[in-house]
Image (tube, rainbow, N blue to C red; front, side):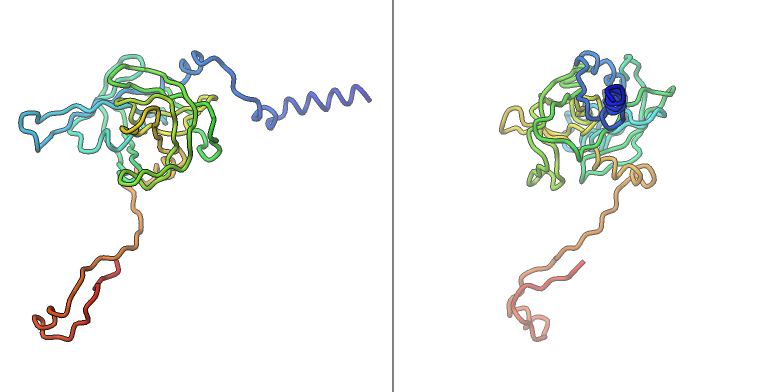
Length: 261
């Protein structure tokens, strides 16, 4: 009886469900060593037509390798409009890259690194199971400092920022700075749960990341067509008063005239 009970308990502890329930407790240094090889630095050279004295500008951002053949996820605002792209790998090697697709609405871009492969790949997680209070780590290149790790928690979920993005984002207090854009937000098990995209200029320790599930949802379109096509319904028109009737010589009812698109 006792032997059977011990065997049943042992099988339960070794089951996949029990293993999945175990918290990830490996040292942060080990986690960094495991994930950072898949994080890259991106230098995007852009031509500024508005400022003749500063015609050429270099934007520095981060990215995360998601496929061994060199596919890299980053932010759209890092690479959009770039005349050329250069990527620095974790081992210090520099190589060119090209844009495969951009989604400015979600602020996600897919680029491909030109060079030898296979490359180290980060594991994508599931942002739908993220909870407020979960410990997270941001890895990137803030202000050009290669391979920097910062630590924090998930401060909020489903955040929308009026005038910036209507897409729900993950809020975190993990320090994020210019140059971190496009780098991964990683959970305690080393899985990518978001792409760091912006910080609040009106506060401290408030950063935002695009949920990885949202980014994963547009990957196919970015690969195949280079953009994301979204249906939409809107109204467009203008206010009209009775004076217009005398001009067009037609009976006009004052009000707002619109068309549906």
